[in-house]
Image 1 (spheres, helix red, strand yellow):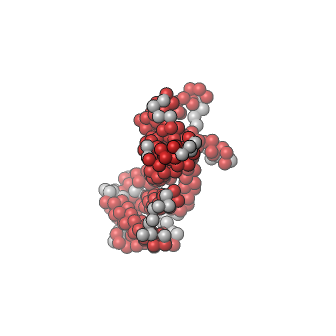
Image 2 (cartoon, helix red, strand yellow; image 1 turned 45 degrees about the vertical axis):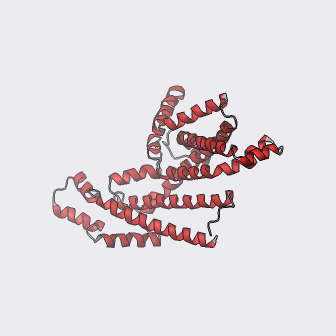
Image 3 (cartoon, one colour; image 1 turned 90 degrees about the horizontal axis):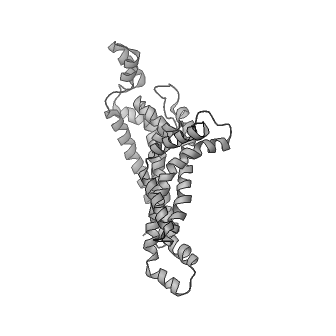
Amino acid sequence: MGAYLTRRFLLMVLTLFGMSVLIFVMLRLVPGNIADILVDAAGIADPKEKAKIIHELGLDRPIIEQYGQWIGGLARGDLGFAYVSERPALEEIAPRIPISAKLAGMALLLSVLIGVPFGVISAVRQNTALDYFLRVISLSGLSLPSFWLGLLVLMASVHWFGTIPIYSNEPRSFLQEVGLLSIPAAVVGFRSSALVMRLTRSSMLEVLRQDYIRTARSKGASQTSVNYDHALRNALLPVVTIIGIEAAFLVGGLIVTETVFNIPGVARFLVEAILWRDYPIVQNLVMLIAFVVVMVNFLVDMAYMALDPRIKYAD
């Protein structure tokens, strides 16, 4: 166990280091930078003025020096200054993290609470009318793009209630914020729940055909005991994997949803920063997303050990 945790920690550090190098280099390979955008926006034609802006932003220094300064700042908790707003990057990023985290958490919780139970029901009631109905719903969830479904929700809300459920004003309470985020969370979670439902169904069907399930039934075990105590626990391993993948996806995959519902979250802010070539913001946000993805993978591995004690990572 200890050896496995040590290997996983070293792998996480190596992965994050590789991601930091890739992020830093790829961002600077994109044509144009913040100085070009500022000069074009201000209508400055003097090359000396452009060179002055580049020098003030530190873009004329060697790339290795720029990378070392960024990594050193990360180690000290200094994320630098945003080029556009000229404010500390941490002050720009920090208020947006809880908003995206709540939205992603609510969407993931909804997908698990809907996808797993209905996937089990669909497998247990295989080839019944209920199974066909649930399969149609899951296929619909996988077929409908989240942004299109979000637009339909907005238009339906305007038509029926005369209001638009968007994040227009700062919520005054936690319940009000949950209410504002519940609709976009449901829009995003609908697709995730459909994916979890189909995978849970297929995994349950595979487990229910195993010999030990027939043995449990022949010994007089109840249907509830067979389905939930014996089958579901063993069927959850691939489900946990897809839940982890969806959790990692939701961290940075909410760009369109946050834009449609006017949510000032991390994903939407990342797109704006990319358009402005705001290097400190883009670098730190992508590193944050990479860190969350790595941590989710680690938690998935820990969940494997809890669900299946036969897995011996330390060997």
